[in-house]
Amino acid sequence: MLKRVVTKCWRSVVLKRLNDTGGGGIFSFVCRDSSTGASISTIYALSSGPNSFTGEDSVEFQVHGGPAVIESLMSALSKLKLKPAEPGEFTKRAFYNGKLDLTEIEGLADLIHAETEQQRKQALLQADGSLSKLYNSWKKKLSTSLANIEAYIDFGEDDNIEQNVLEKCNETIRTLVADISQHLADGRRGEILRTGVRTVIIGQPNVGKSSLLNYLACRNAAIVTPIAGTTRDIVELSTNISGYPVILADTAGLVTVTEDIVEKEGIKRARSYATTADFIILMIDVSNFLSSEKSFGDYLHHYVDQLEISDLIKEKRGNFIIIVNKIDLVKCDDYKVINDLREYGAIPISCDKEDGFTDLCGNPSRENPTISQARHRIHLKTCIDYLNNYLGVVNNYEYDMVIAAQQIRFAMRELGKITGHVSSEEILDIIFKNFCIGCLHDLNWPSASTEDTKPRKFVLQKTKMRRKELLQ
Image (cartoon, rainbow, N blue to C red; front, side, top):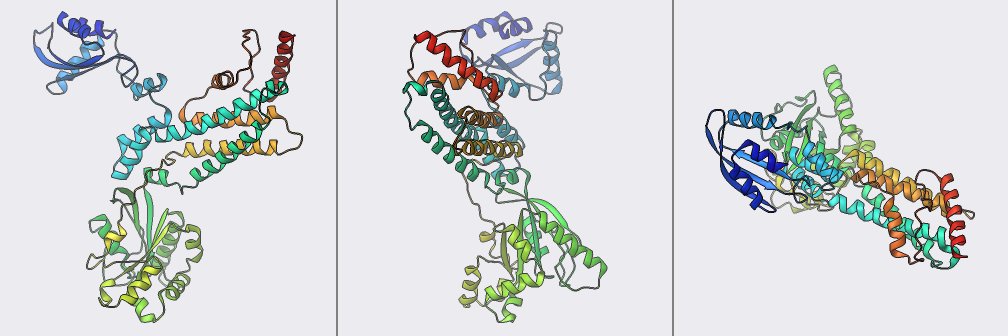
């Protein structure tokens, strides 16, 4: 088809070159407009399926000039019963032709829209198939377990199947439940990285929250004055910190007693925003700590209680950091104070001197694949539910192996929904590949149902009866 299209558009020499290309390549020729006689130097890249992006034969034209030249080319192609591609059509064709699965397509989309280095890295890992390999490895283990169980149901009475095959399957399922649960317990890191880490800065008035916001944003986004309570409302902006997309929010200083109506509303909004944030930065003024003459641990507990944020800190668990500002006020030889701060994981900085920000803006690197889409999480949770149902069935004294097998089948289907690969034929392939149980083949044998358990019981009983008849 491509050869005919190119030949109709331009000179016959193009057909010869296309025939000579074999598997594809990049070539140049002169394109002549038959109506005007004008010629344009053109480059075309030919990709032969199934080695192309879509898995189909494709050709890409590169022409000189501006939009008018491209429009002329598109007009010529439209006369050959060709139509413009729909949005995402080439990627869709790649999916249907088995070149990409859904997780790789989602990674490709994230890569196109990546705005920071860490977003690019995560998207690139996913587009390269990191999630696909993980989920397919889990699905393969489930397929093998299901094949063993199906074989046990059909042929276990003939002693061709090891007696401990079920226990091996059960151990595999328990391990998978633990692995998937650990995969889910990632704090939504991948999803947050895609959308941006919602980070809020909280603390007492005049501890340097607005100065920190301005430094991280690399601009004067918030008003900074020596007057306590300058910030009254939420100041929110998007920024890039060490390659991570961050939605940063400055808030009103938290006080427990105030008669100012505007300040009360600002504090209310600050507390509300903090409860929905992904990450909390708790700021402390080192001068207040020094004047308290307490250990930093005692002062920190007092500070948290004073701000009435104990429940918030417990809820966020490890998703917060402590920053001690104005560290330039500490004497250089006062190592006791610095060590006291670091013992509790506090990061000493000076917004005035711009010191200590290397510790704050580190660049942690994680190479393990993470969940990047909410739909992945939904399917994985449902998968675990089915696997737990399986374990619940087999732990019952009078359990039904048909029902147990169905739970594994449903769990596999949930994993298949993530990648876009849902098939039942692979179970039969594994059964007859890994188990040598005779050489009889009958196209009239009923196939196993993959939809419900009642037909499945009937099919298994009928299959066993038919097999006995053939062996008599």
